[in-house]
Length: 239
Image 1 (cartoon, rainbow, N blue to C red):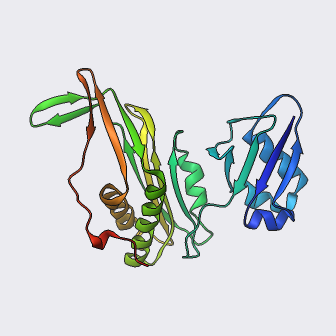
Image 2 (cartoon, one colour):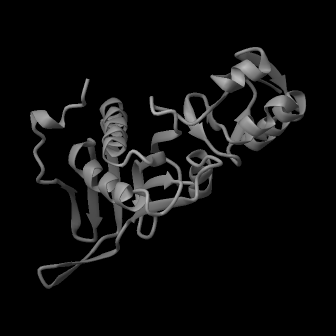
C-alpha cells in the first residue's frame, strides 16, 4: 500500500523534503510501522522522529493506530511557544500516553517533572448524599480552547521562569469512571524551581478560562456541569 508522509520543522530539514510517498507491504500497517520505515530510510533523523508527535488524516495518532492505503501520516515536533522550551497542547479523543508526553517536555537539563492527572470520579459526597456517576462527556470549543491553553502556559512562564517544558492535554468525548480526563505536566531542572506550583496553577487556571465542559451521566439522568467563574477583561491573552 502507499501512504503520503508529511514532515514539519526539524524533521523536514533533516529529511530534505516536507512530503514523500511511502510504500509499505500488505494492506494495513500501524503508525509504529511507518515510523520504523522512515527511520530505516532516514537514519539521520531517528532521534527526532522517535520523539515526534504523529497524526493520521489530521487527527493525533499513536503507535498502535492503524494506517491504510491512501492515508496521510504526519510527524512533527511537540508544539512550541516562544520560550525555546517544549510545549504540548492537545484536545484528545484517545487515552493519554503519559510516558510520551513526559518525553516530549523534557530536555537534557531536566531533573524534575510534576504531573497533575484528573480522573473520572464514580462517587461524590454532595452535602451528605452520595452521588454516583456512570460516565462523563466532555466537549470543547476547540480553537479557543487551544489558544487559552497557550495562554495558561504563558502565564506559567511569567510566574515561574525556571519551568522548562509544559504539557496541557484535555480529553474530549465519553469517558468512563477511572479514566484520565486531563493531564498537566511541568518540567524543570530541579524540584524546587517551580514545577509543583506551576502544575497546580495550570489546572486551576484551565478550569477558569479554557472553554471545556462536561456532562455528568448518572443512573437517574444526566446534566451539564457548569462552573461559577466569569472571565473579566484581565483574562484576555496579553498581546
